[in-house]
Image (tube, rainbow, N blue to C red):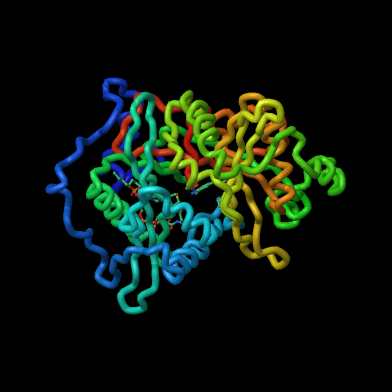
Length: 392
Ligand SMILES: CCCCCCCCCCCCCC(=O)CSCCNC(=O)CCNC(=O)[C@H](O)C(C)(C)COP(=O)(O)OP(=O)(O)OC[C@H]1O[C@@H](n2cnc3c(N)ncnc32)[C@H](O)[C@@H]1OP(=O)(O)O
Ligand SMILES: CN(C)Cc1n[nH]c2ccc(-c3ccc(F)cc3OCCn3ccnc3)cc12
C-alpha cells in the first residue's frame, strides 16, 4: 500500500509514507490546535439520502441497532470465515468509559427507512507517548453497511468524528486496523491458543497438524482444571488501588501506553460477566497484590458453517507479573478461560507477550494489527514489545 495512492489519508495530519525515514521531521503534533471558534460548527455533508444521528448507547433500542449493524457488517478475517460479534453489554462498556461524550457515538441513517447504515465512535483516553501524556480520542467501531461500501462514506465519517473531537479541544487520536494506512507506528502479529481444539478444527479455524490425530491434538492442548498459583483470585473493587499501582508501574516502561488512573482501572478492569475478566495474585503471606492478568470476551460469528454459529474467543488484555513467573500467570489465565467455556485465547505480540506465546502453545494468526496515531508523529516506529496499549 506504500505505492497505493491514499486520496483521503494524504490530506490528513498523519505520518505520510513519503516521509518515512525523514528524521528531520520533529516528533509530536503535526498540526497545531486551532481556536475552538475556528472549528467547523456544523456537521459535514452526507449524500442527500443519509442523515447523521447520535447514538445513545444507554437506550436499549439504539444499542441494539448498533449491535446489529456491527454483527452483520463489521470486521471479518481475511478468509471471510468469521465476523466479530461484539455483544451489547460489551459495546456499552467499550463506549461509556469515564468522561465519555455521547456526541462521539456517531451513526448514519437512511432518511427514508431510518435504518442505521454506518457508525463510528470515539472515547477519550490519556495516552502517554514517550514522556508526554496526551489527551486523545480512541477511534473504533468504524462500520459501513456492506451494501454501501466503496462510496467514500468512510472519509466523511472520519472527518465528522474528527470535527466533534476538535470541539472538545482534543487534537490527537489513536486507532488500530487490520489494513495498512499512512502510517503505522507499529505492526503487531496476533496469536491463538487452542482451548477447544476439536471445535476449532471442525469449524476450519485450525487444521489437524501433520502426523497428528484428533485425540493427540486434544491431549496436546489439555489444561489443569484449576489455576495453580497460590492466591490466584478474581479481582474485586477493593483491589483497584493496588492493581492501578501495579499496572502504572508496568506500563511506564513502554514507548506508547495508556495512562490509567484508579477511575480508569475501575471501569476497564473490574470484572464484568461476559465482557471482561480479571484476576490477581494476592500473596498468601503478605497479602500484597503481586500479579495481574485480564482478558476480554469477543465472540465471532462463524460464517457458513451448518454445525456451529459462534466462536467463543477470549482476548488477552493487560497482564503484569512481578512475583509469579509470567508463563505461570498466563497459563492460569488459559486455565480459567478454558473453564469459562472459551474455544480460543487470542493475544497480540505487544508488551512482553512474546515471552509466553510459543511456550504456552500459541500458534501464529494469519494477519496483522496495525497501530496508528492521528496528528502525532513518532521519529521512528516502535517494536510491538515497546507498545503498552490494547484497543478493543
Ligand atoms: C483529533 C481526532 C481525530 C479522530 C479521527 C482519527 C482517524 C480515525 C480513522 C478511522 C479508524 C477506524 C478504526 C476502527 O474502527 C478499527 S478497524 C475496523 C474498521 N471496520 C471494518 O473493517 C468493518 C468492515 N469494513 C467496513 O465497514 C468498511 O470497509 C470501512 C468503513 C472500514 C471502509 O469503508 P469502505 O466503504 O470500504 O471505503 P470508502 O468509504 O469508500 O473509503 C475508502 C477510504 O477509507 C479508507 N479506509 C478503509 N478502511 C479503513 C479503516 N479501517 N480505517 C481508516 N480508514 C480506512 C481507505 O484507505 C480509503 O482512503 P484512501 O483513499 O485515503 O486510502
Ligand atoms: C482491535 N479492534 C480495532 C478490532 C479489529 N479491527 N480490525 C482487526 C483485525 C484483527 C484483529 C485481531 C486482534 C487480535 C487477535 F488476536 C485477532 C484479531 O483478528 C483475528 C481475525 N479476525 C477478524 C475478525 N474475526 C477474526 C482485531 C481487529
